[in-house]
Length: 403
Image (cartoon, rainbow, N blue to C red; front, side):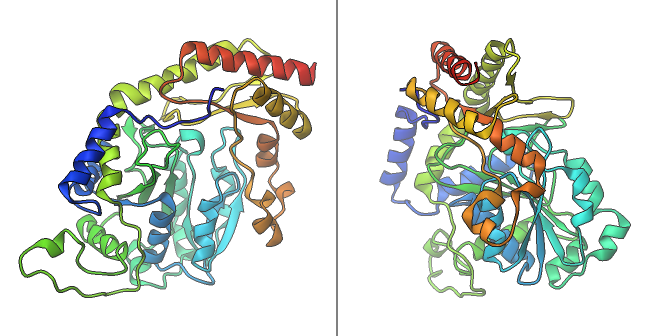
């Protein structure tokens, strides 16, 4: 059976985790702080906070910005539920926007959804392809859009406009205008979940890129405190002589990364550009080379003038296929011992959001993408022979179902 996305766990990972265990630091400690610095350098920002998941990190930012009941947050309709769930956790309203054929939010449709209640926009780099950040920034900086913004907290007053929080769960190592993503908008949050390009088993990271008058170091300290239940000293700080006493300055969260997780990330980051990304890129190219000859295959867009994907998900689309046919094709592929997936069910198709009154037919592009998409396996140990096996299974399955 060819799996979908197993993690790369080898002797280097095991040795680094063992080193963390033997050091006595199994919670947030020196390895986590080193990991933060290395990510900051990689992403061209001055400060990064490592957290235990994308979800907790992103919700922490909504809390920091003061988003609450009565506010609105714009998200793409085509994303994993976490993007919207964190908005619901804050008591705010999720405003869904349709997407483009490249799976990213349709920026041309955002402005009409902005009201005086809009406090944030969370674009998503689906599959690893960055959105057009400059176009989105141009919207939130329009004088008439800034005039609509009604700040209700000190941080909202300082920013003076809608906050952009990039959901980069898929796009660590992707490039926008030649630079690794992370420094394009106010905050960029990565996921290091087990299936991601770079994993720490579970985990995530917040890149801080706020404009003046914000001070990134100060914001890092605030977020670090909030990630530890609002406790003003972490375990590392309390090891200093006489530094046992602490205070709690806010009812914060519990979402710090541990040194055990960071140790995995340090190994992964060290070989990311030299091994991981080149391998994933080669897999994408081989899939496209083998599939482009078929009229029914719509291969994914992963590089253009300004953007290059992180090659996280190979989002194949089957042309002129019904939802029922797509599902039958998937079953046929599995019957040939190849694992595939679908990314994602649009949010209104999930029982929770459907129950809130969201209707998928209001988002025709997302609906059409969902009905024809199949994600193919991409992982470090996937061989050229494996790729041929996957493509053969897909081709035979499509022919069997479509004729």
